Image 1 (cartoon, rainbow, N blue to C red):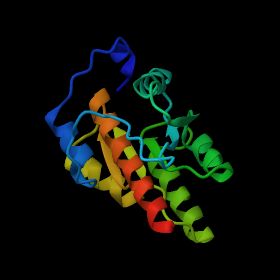
Image 2 (tube, helix red, strand yellow):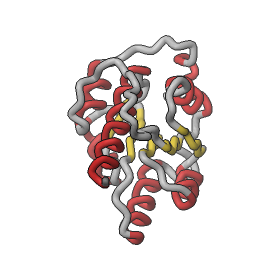
Image 3 (cartoon, rainbow, N blue to C red):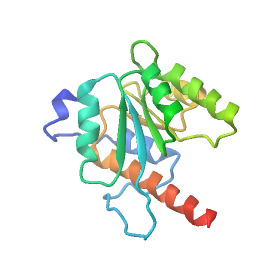
Image 4 (spheres, one colour):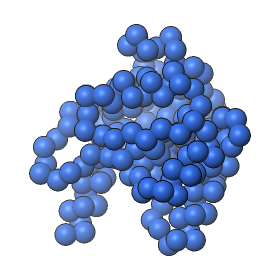
Length: 174
């Protein structure tokens, strides 16, 4: 899937897509509104996708938010970015040249285990939404799934869930 046709803002939310968004997060897929909780719940996001159009669409969907996006063009660049910086969430295209998302996810999980780090949420992104593909994504170490094409609302709902999770973790740590 290439998001080029969706850059003008015409997206088509799919029922299965919203199910995938709320599957593991158990959240109500509502309108995205950033909450002013007094806690910095902005996210450092690593976006790993070989399609310039997909990266542009993702960034456009988040342009009016406080979140910071670091882009990588393939799995190898994504692993290198992860080595250099801690991220709150990773959005991983599963089919890329040089190193695909399955390989990159396994390497990231091994790096976290070796360092004794808490696993970073990794959201698998692929146009393959059949159960077997979702299962393979989870086996590789992904924690969530967002089918392509995804709507702005679906992405922002997922981002809101991760912001809420970060906020809860920060409160629990104090």
